[in-house]
Structure formats: C-alpha cells, structure tokens
Amino acid sequence: MEITLPLNPNDLTTSYDSDTEENDKMEQNLEVLAVYEEALEIQQETLLPDYAHLVNCYDNIARIYENTKEHSKALLFYQKALEICQKNLPLNHSNVAALYNNIAGVYYTMKEYSKASSQLEYALNILKILVPKDDSNIKIVQNNIDYIKKKR
Image 1: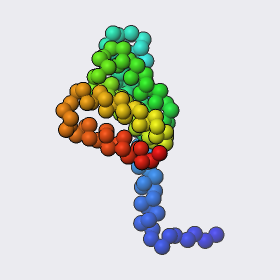
Image 2 (image 1 turned 30 degrees about the vertical axis):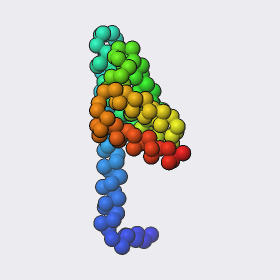
Image 3 (image 1 turned 90 degrees about the vertical axis):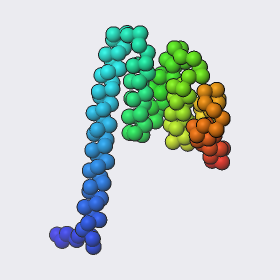
Image 4 (image 1 turned 60 degrees about the vertical axis):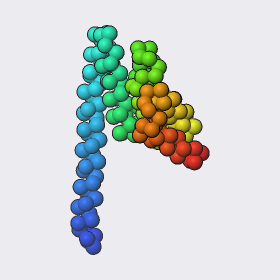
C-alpha cells in the first residue's frame, strides 16, 4: 500500500488544526452549557424572586445553542427569557428589545425572514422610545430590517 502525501503537507496540517479548533470550541460549548444548565437548575429549585438571574441563565443557554447550531433550542430559551422580562419589566425595556433582536437573529439564521423581520420591528419600536432618533442601534436594526426585506 502506498501513501501519497498532498503536494503541500502544510495544507493537511492546517486542515487538522482547523478541525481540532472546531472540536475544541464544541467541547467548550458543551462544558459551558453544562454549567449554565446546572445554574438554571439551582435557580429553579430555590425559586428566588430574582428574575434577572433566571433571564441571564436562559439567555446564556440560548447563546450556546446558537453557537452549536441548535436553533430551535436557542429559540426556546430566548423565548423563555422574553416571557420573564415581559412579566417583570416595562414592555419598552432595553432587555426586551435585546431579546427580540436575539430571536430575530435565530430566525434569520433559520431563513425564516418574515419572523426575523417582525422581531426586529418589535425591537425597533422599543428602541425608538428609549434612545434618540440618530442612535446607532436604531440605524443598525433598521438596516437589518431593510436587508431582510430584500431577502424575501
């Protein structure tokens, strides 16, 4: 049996390095996810009235699921965080806007552009109440809405 090396062995090394980095990231995500899930379990068992910690746990877990491309799980946890915020904060709170924006990002990745657009519209409406009209966040969200409309 004859083994043929690629013309440039560095290409192979780079490929292995890239695969290793990706595996390391995945393992890190899974380790971090386990920590967040444990924190969430403790939070739920103690039933502390501090909703902010619970929202942070849900948000962090959602981000990990986003990173691991488990979009429906990410949506589930973002929506849980949003429900808690909607019950405990004014509807025009910046955290609510941020969660709408995060949910929009997941929908966009899933190519569900109309859902992404409507979530961004919610975020934009909140931002228009909270920040000056020329705020960069308003411009970014509006540009994202416009970009999605072109995708449809």
